[in-house]
Length: 274
Image 1 (cartoon, one colour):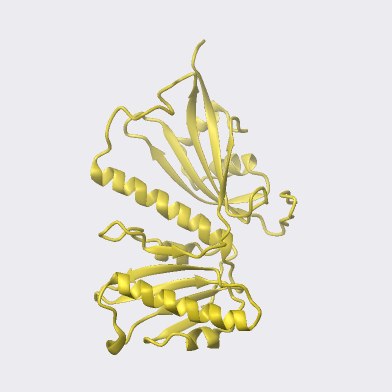
Image 2: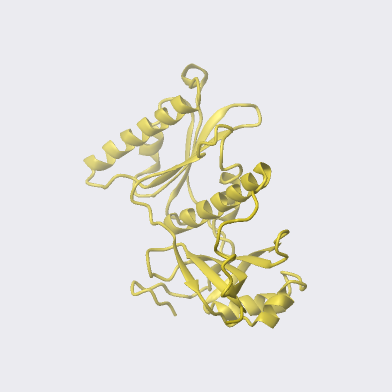
């Protein structure tokens, strides 16, 4: 049996399982049916810097999908926590413990009001001046005053998330996801329990032919033909951005596309949208 070259598609959906998502990440690549090397063990070992960049890219993309699945503009909160001189933690571990205790105080307040525990993502950061601080994305059910009052170690600023109609929370996510690992290889972000986990669907065939896919290699990502090709294969979605990569080892084209549900598109619980 000969080897057949086809275009494969993998979609990461920022929603509950089988529910049409507001935001999706779509990857395209050449797949050789009958080839064992495509999914088999690598015959070479990535250099450490290259592997680190690859891992960081994957972590950023997952973080992006996780945020988009759980937090919305004008509904949820973006919080910044800093420490004053008298309460500055000795190290990252102590700082994270202090923030988790703050979460505990918030959940205590919520339970008194008959609410479930909060949903959040905590992001650790070191400023250019070397000061430790934290950013937190949190659901917007509790009042801002209560959230700020629960922080007793310095400054707490709690604002509603602001979402751009075209790119959603992309700017904020890009800021929060820079350098997803610390020097000790520990995650810079901590998710709460109960978050919606992005889910992946795989397609063995697409509306994009091999000939058209190879054409995408040479035409600009911002061209109308590029946009029409990707959007036609993902009805109801508009293309936000594209990352085009040519594999240095195989010469194959890889596309990573960010897409958003078109304005007016409805999300239904049965997983189908207009």
